[in-house]
Image (cartoon, rainbow, N blue to C red; front, side, top):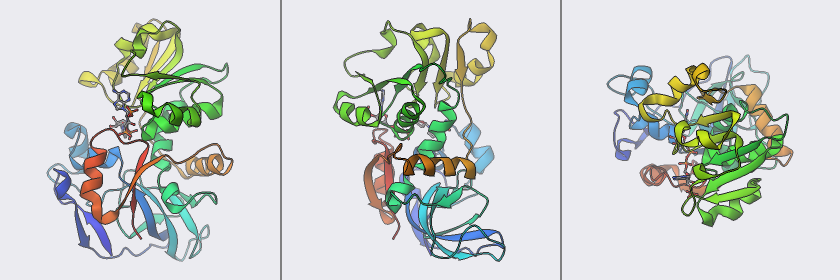
Length: 321
Ligand SMILES: NC(=O)c1ccc[n+]([C@@H]2O[C@H](COP(=O)([O-])OP(=O)(O)OC[C@H]3O[C@@H](n4cnc5c(N)ncnc54)[C@H](OP(=O)(O)O)[C@@H]3O)[C@@H](O)[C@H]2O)c1
């Protein structure tokens, strides 16, 4: 099969189209013929690598242990192992292969109990490929907010993959949402569920006077110290980035010193149960895929360079077939 392979860390060009053996499913595995996948910020982080002190020990000290990146997929079941009962050949499926990667390829094998479920009937393969990673990271963040009293939530980077998922999830749970993005994206974030929009090119959201129950920085461009004055006394700050000197990890542990305010840094996890929840959200009309550009898998280098600008809106899809 064709796959995008990288055998060394480095520039976008280390990713090359190669012929590799097609995987064969174990007894409990499903072989998926991938129709669409994505190129996301996690792929970028593991290729360069970003945060080498964390990535190299877990993914290969000198060179990557897993040589095919990509974590999101949507496609068709091409074969099943003899013990598989949840899927049959021809089923349309979608899901995530978070830390195992391997979706920048024509085929992947995935255990039937892992993060794979039937594709939502109201999405194309390309749309279905572009929801799970943002939703996983968004869900990990949003689950830390208390929605019992219609909280006021500010989401910075509301147009990104994670940010657009956070806006839609916060809307679903009933928050009052202030989205921060470039002014030209106001209509998009309002359509996703934002009640108010702050254009960060003309206003500094950290200087606001109406405090928030939670500030969710989906692009990691702020810090707890810049945001603490806009948090309510028991307010919560969450960022997707570690912050200067990994401060967000230390602040998570320093709760007694923050005078009632809290910082959280969730570690992403995925599960079949979560993917089933995403399917329910989508089929219930509560969630839309936000897709910026679509490239053929063979244009991986161009797609990578675009994602690395840090300015993609939502998701960048790779078409495999
Ligand atoms: N913690 C984790 O496990 C984890 C996993 C994956 C990714 N991440 C991190 O999460 C962050 C977001 O990832 P993503 O894929 O959602 O990002 P992304 O899609 O690359 O985010 C790009 C968006 O950020 C907005 N943006 C750029 N500069 C901004 C600024 N100064 N203020 C506000 N918005 C700004 C842009 O929108 P506008 O044009 O509207 O500005 C663009 O839509 C990245 O920093 C990534 O490294 C963390």
